[in-house]
Image 1 (cartoon, rainbow, N blue to C red):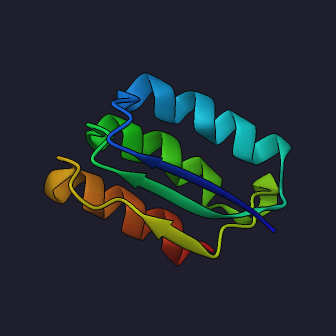
Image 2: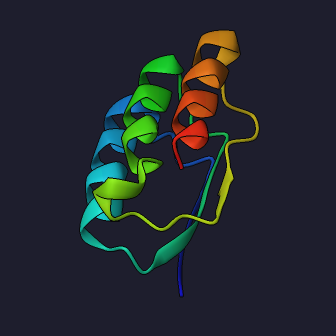
Length: 84
């Protein structure tokens, strides 16, 4: 089991895109915490890909506390999780 935890990393949306690409190549990562990393709905759109079962990511826990994802980002996350 691999965990990826970034707190106040300020990775923003571009960093999330890179993290998702990592997750898709490393299915052993099951925990993702991106707390206070300045992620917006665009970053949630990238995360949406990691929640699709056919991609190979095996996330069992995701924490996105203290990010300005708003309603649009929440809807994207919910959409991805509903397919999982």
